[in-house]
Length: 153
Length: 396
Image (cartoon, rainbow over all chains, first blue to last red; front, side, top):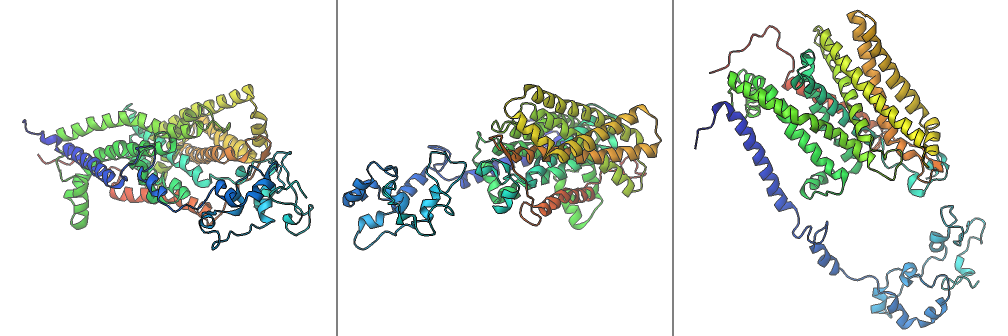
């Protein structure tokens, strides 16, 4: 092997420094990037099993229908028919698993409604919306509207 | 919310009421532009052999480095969690234009600027190493990578490699700031930004601002050190400032004419905005005060004869106005692009905080920081020739 040019020695040192920097980066990368990153997409593959092992919060509409067929019947033909039970009542897996000991919370019959039905020019004109200062009094909307079939008032 | 709604006129979508990109995002293209411009001025001497600008060469390089170190800080301040910035390099996201800027930045900083400054200063570093003691000696020794060879051949090799680095550096500097323009120009949902001319306009405005900054730094440090300004150098820098400015202004006018003639569906909304909310910052500050006046002054020095003192004054004044104008341009792009609704039916207002994370105070601090860094760099690596210093005989 020919001897290194002594007038270029500083440049070789710079090159070695850069190579060491790149190697250090690659080492850090190997340590810091979680295993399985990028296998399915821009995320850690193991996140899928981690998420799968989390406790389930939502029971799903079918579980509600098992016991509450009267409500299912009431909702038929209503504008609210397509809305999931847990969209208003919250996650109910605990209730579905132990109906006698865990009771669901009753939704707020005013704040919850206004979440969708508060008047806003950005909403389509055909969407039912109200200005709560002008429509109804300060009481809950549910005193006139049946939330499971709001057209009946 | 109440306060924001007072500043809204017409119809805005709910997510457009409050501006998400603050003054810190204005600083990002402004500072990056200063870096690219300063470097391009420096490369004039090295690659294109414009010997007249030599007195500004080292100063321009150090200015570029000081500003480059600060360039990502506004972004990190805006996003929060600066510790996560490194993850961008670990798991590069090639579809994110913003994430890829990290690589453009790193390339420019490490492969171009640091190497070029090191090669340029190697002789000074070695001499400082030899002539100092204690911690200073250790510092310069590490900086010299433990090699004190400054033989004429070694320096000639440095010169050659340095030139190659500068040749790579010019497209890199173009890439750096062209890329910033691309980040804005590629947002197709925003008609104020979405234009293929954006990278080119950004690039030339970067050159203008960088040259103006180096000119000011040169005049300032000459005054501070009570040394005479090299008028040939200053005249040449001012001439290049004028040329770059003319191209930049022509490109911006080209963009404007194109928009006016094309007059697509966004035009009326944007036109209204320019005549109302952006009138002061765009028409008055950017175009009149920040472009036409300095352009006129610089052009005047090319045609009329002025004394040295008058020329120096005119250049300094024109460079100050230029920086104000380019800052206004960044402001009008970043803030202006968020003031109108994508429905083209309404306008909002930018409310800037003061001592908040993205307020005026951090912006001022971030703008002062590069000057502090530059001061430190000038102490460590003085760019000026030592007065009366004879050519030091290198060790064999």
